[in-house]
Image (cartoon, rainbow, N blue to C red; front, side, top):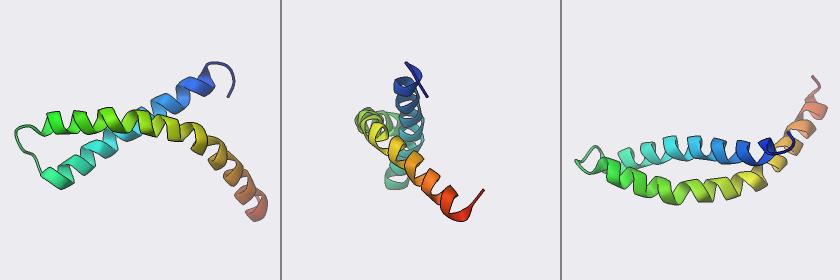
Length: 75
């Protein structure tokens, strides 16, 4: 990935993952109280920037690890 896409992709991917995971964890911890959306969005607001920063480190590592695994097991 090159250009702007290499910056946009991790941010969007992290947003999608954080959105779904914070919903799940909030639901598991609280059930569905009347203020569920407020709790969920508060968790998401914290999780997305953390996930995006982590994605910039994790994506290159995952690419290298994938390449290594493919070389070891063969295509």
